[in-house]
Length: 340
Image (tube, rainbow, N blue to C red; front, side, top):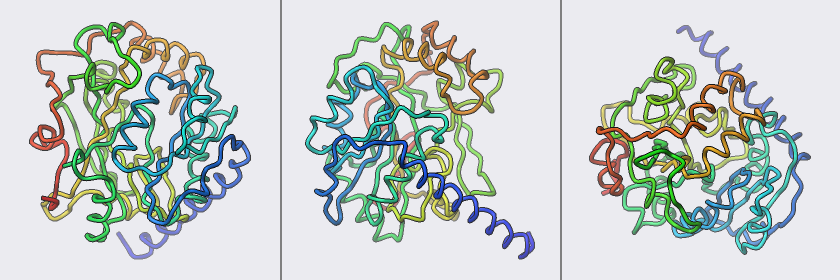
């Protein structure tokens, strides 16, 4: 690639970042503060940012999981929940809460709202940005909190931490799962696909693109290119000029996507345990099919929603029982890198 083309490409990416940051700044008026505890944020605090709707089933365990990892405060946008999520969150002493009735789809699927909060409160902090059905784990996470992880990353000159989103599922039809609030989802969603993944590199962004797993084989077998993207960058030492470009899959500036080693080694990485397939999944799919707020062309996903509503069994004889991070590392789904 010529120097001129490289320069022009860099200018275009910078312009795209600036436009979307400005868009997020304008979108800040769509969210209204309900509970503001941000004055308690201290230097060095690890923050978590999330957008949600109707997640009362998951919230107790979600908050407990990230508190145990060392998150100091949760900054959450509630997209007009009707199941009591908003009242529950408002009572939590470490939650700052915003509310909006605006379109999730028209806010870049919630990222514009979170971008504004990241710019205002996340600058200079290590920030976790996840969905409520994503539980971050990493090597030694039971004994080493996020502060130990971020200290190590900083000592290595890293500002980002990558993770594979790993779909967990039960054995049997997905609507027969029995789950109680506060229970760890892996107690009932205790299987996953150890293989069945493809990986490519997006040359323009320098990002990894991993696809596969149970959703691809069950719902997108005839069109794998439409399968979910499983690569995410959920932990970032934030700067107000940074931008999540495509959910938390990619970032700008582009160097932030270098979550892998190009010299044949392995970088430290984690896994997001994806707990999508709890028993509420069929009802949520019916609602989302009607709301049409899905990423991409909503009509394209009608068949997907219908397939989920039919409550298939995702388990196969090749499924692997979930036993913890050590097994995931042994299978190459996460890596401790040089973090012994």
